[in-house]
Image (cartoon, rainbow, N blue to C red; front, side, top):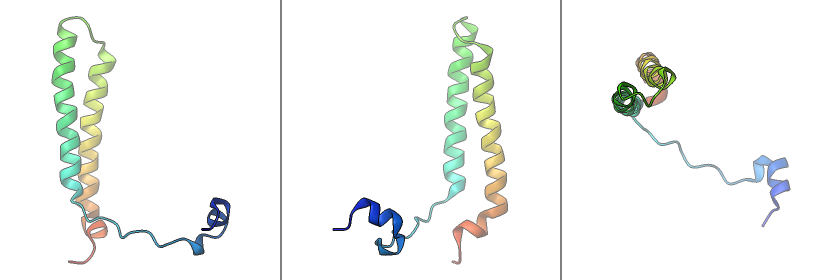
Length: 85
């Protein structure tokens, strides 16, 4: 068995990696947005009770906005990451 140093210095001797999984990134991003939305609702409840800060609410909103940007990216690059069908 080759040493770790040899494998790091000679990558051609490594076994080939497994093929990438084919996933629907739209579903992944929508799942993330849904989790941020749940966190936003919970944070708003805690904020109304006076136990959360504005930064916590803004963080949840930022997660939703970035998820929306991820959806736009996914739509533009869908053919690139899905490959040929």
